[in-house]
Length: 420
Image 1 (cartoon, rainbow, N blue to C red):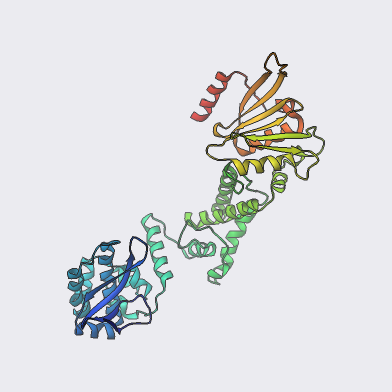
Image 2: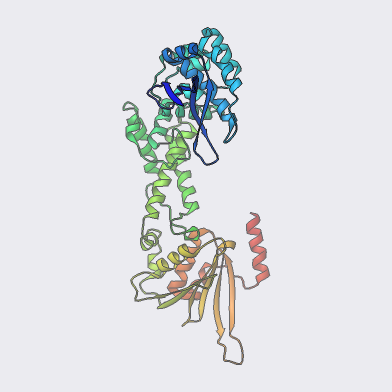
């Protein structure tokens, strides 16, 4: 039989219950192996109940002191009741100086007290009882999160000024640097908002006209890593030049915002528009002589493109790559059967081969091909070469050399490239 004797409005603060006639403190902490919350109890006396009922600060301090014991119990272990009971008198009944001395010796959950209004300055000086004079029953979890975020920054030597902090709040990255940034002007104090917007304007001007293109080699929504790094470098240099007082965290969050927004625009752009933005559209439609092409991957899947269709050859091909590319599927071919020529893209090796039919097979002998190789510099290089081939076939690729027909020579060139 279990009856609740005392509880506070905040459901997470430990309750006092009477179980089989015995007073106990009951608290939820941690989770079991099935990720369900665990509940722990241990006995208390009437004297302890009186303090818990009348002194919110002591109640919270006891909770903070017991939580590490709950953590030590893990997903299925038992609470060390003797250790929990041993905390009752020193936390609830001792003089403030003795309580402060106890908290200097034991593990305790600092974030719990900060969330419930503890004075952080006093807490860090070891004056726990004094810090809890303004304790609140309703918690503010964000306050504790911000405290720990500041501690992590301080451990690596980063100290935020008011403008730095305001910029991180604007992008939503004050608490977690890995959070995708977004624009949150209402999170910034109105007095600092104009300064924040001047920093953002500097970044926007620096990357005006720049874009982050798609990289279908890594999927239809992937973007070009080199484009991202180029924009990141440009924005950071401009912001540091115009606002040298900003710390690295603030500068990085602004460049992260610019790059994330540019990448989102690219991901949500149809493939044809992405090609046009990259300056390749004219290569794939217009006066080019290609009328039909066949796309294949390393798994034998094939897709046909016809000139009178609604989409450009480039858009069709790169969408095919985005749909099919994977760690075990990194070789793609574009073939013009009528002209007897094609190109093969080797994404795993940053290379491409152009293949020209020299002699057709006649039943008595196999066809003869000329195969030439060259290295490719990123997705932009692949786009240029695909565009040139669609526009003018293998002949149009001549200006994009050097091309090597000797496989051993090409492998040596590739190894030198990889070594660099």
